[in-house]
Image 1 (spheres, helix red, strand yellow):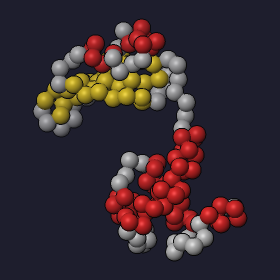
Image 2 (cartoon, rainbow, N blue to C red):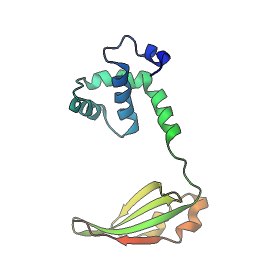
Image 3 (cartoon, helix red, strand yellow):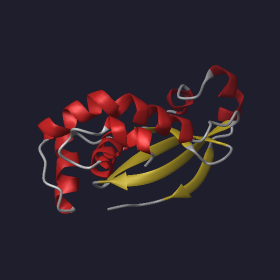
Amino acid sequence: MTTLARLRYTGYRFPAEIISHAIWLYFRFPLGLRMVEELLAARGIILSPKTVRPWAGKFGRQFANQIRRRLPRVGDKWHLDEVVLEIAGVKHWLWRAVDQTGIVLDVLVQRRRDTPAAQRMLPRDAAPAAEEADATATRHDH
């Protein structure tokens, strides 16, 4: 960590690395403050959710912007991927909107196969590609 970055963390009880790791966990993954506390406690770092909240308020925007910049860009060609699976003995259809690089953009689970509803997940300009719904696999999970 650079000297300039360390200056922002002066006056805190925890080192800059712990503060930045806690904020990274909070913003990178859909975790609540208590989950961040539990993950850090598993590593021997004991703090309360009341400690993480002000850190997220003060340093969060910078971390969120860095994470957003590092995410891959969404491709311009999308298609629907359809998988039939069993959940608790009931047949369901899993639809995924996927771009040309394989990034999953949206997910929809239905009890009845409703292709038009699944196609509404796609943007208007990607709608023609949705007509070629891929039935890539049939999977039965119990």
